[in-house]
Amino acid sequence: MSTTNLNVLAASRNDVETQLAGARDPAVQLVNDWQIARYVSLLLCRVQQRLESRMMVNTGNWGLTADLRNRAESQAGHAIGDSGAYAIAREAEVFAMTEALRLQDSIPEVAAKSIMGIIAKLEMIVGADRDIGDPTDFPWPHIASVMRDLKAIAGDLPRGRRSRARTRGNVAKHWDSAAKVVAALEEESALEHRGQRG
Image (cartoon, rainbow, N blue to C red; front, side, top):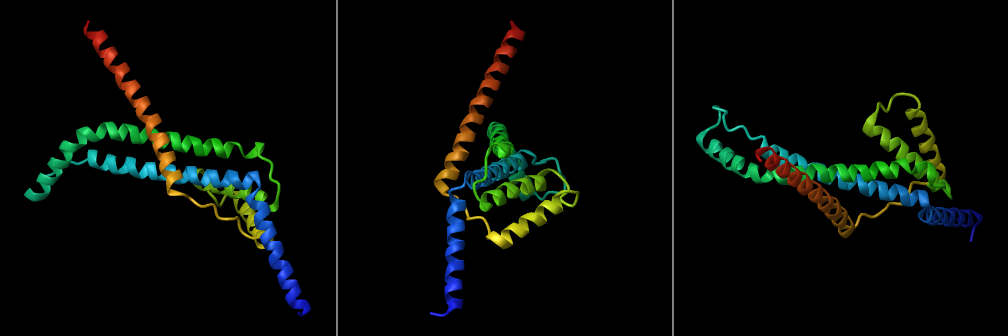
């Protein structure tokens, strides 16, 4: 076997070892959990938006044809039932986003144990900025540049796999928590309403 082939084998073995070390790094696990939490919040946001669009049907629009107006009125009739689901979806989205932010806030407490862990932490920092700020402002392009350099040297993050069961479980957890909050608020409102009558 030639020396070149041995170098290629050694390099590929090092890549595999780097990937395995990264997979065991708590910072890599943190970024995987964060990505799942963000994905769940996006799913819940879509549910909330769909319910919101159903509730916003404007049946008074004279430009609608009779067929479209009938469909709109039918949807508006469902909107009354959708308002409870909408409130739950809105709260569930808040719970999911709060979980993502909690994971994001824990970056300083999690020690990276590999180059992959450092890349993971930078990935979260740069990813969080995409949501809230201008990615062209200092220091974001500079941090993104450092992250690209690290990835060129060490490789990309190991891909976390989203399981449907975990995603459904997270959605259900947030939905259940939100349903309890909405039910408690409705009960409190009903008690206040009865108190005002009496």
